[in-house]
Image (cartoon, rainbow, N blue to C red; front, side, top):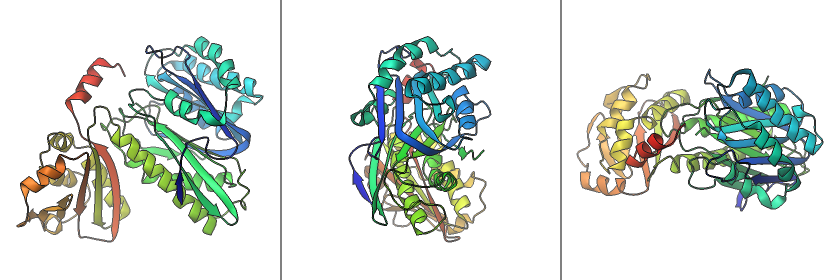
Length: 406
């Protein structure tokens, strides 16, 4: 794998654009399109929140089709809790974009992010769409990444290249989401986190769905900023086949290599999301190892990542490892605390269920003052491991979410 510059438009045949439609009060870019020059296969994963936004419902329905060619996204308005009007507006977005691109509306996927419970100004979308469609270009991948932002402080893009047989395959992505972020997405084979991935790989729809399912499990589904699951969480991937590799139609070596690369892209994007959490000053990586199963490791890591007490301690550079132990014990996973070890970076804090004799609190405190915090929990009970990512909980987070309506 080779990391390259760019994002969504790094793969062959993908164009993008982003414009100001007037949806955001700030006047920033808020409407964007991703377009494949040829029909592509697509897969998606969506929030398990029972209160699903209208674009989630529409995209789930459209993904039942065989091929897709575009994704239209707006920010500044979630188009959620708007009843049948919301679903009509989401369908209109797909229909209007499709008409301009010469596509059936079912070939267009839809996503929205922003404030819940406000009617989407579809007339503003309709007015801005012609200029957006006309301005699609290979160079506008960053415009897409910018237009999907809400309270994000920076654009989030990533791309890499791999070799499959004699062909060079590119995978590129863009994502957003720094608040209301605790995804638990599932693929539907039949501050919301939005993630978009494009690839020029040739792969069947079924294998793409399987690959995405594997990739999100230990990436986007292992991120937490505040423990609140959004109504709009969505992850999309389109594969247009222009790389010319032998089509991936089974779980052979090419599938494994492609999926490993997709997992890497997804994990890098997940870390970007956690590191830019609302008000965050520190990226926190939590590794749980020595678990009986991967599922156990994931549960413990996710529980620790949602501990507000721990997140506050990290913000204050307080190496309070007791909060890690308490969170792990509340995960619902059965383990023996008398076998448990905890490390704060390189400093061993807990050894076999008791404070480590070598624990140096001031050394741990200095480590906690950094902007990248690593916590390791070893259950010493089995062969499995998992990682989760979160951020500290700062005073700025409270300020943002008391001033910004979500």
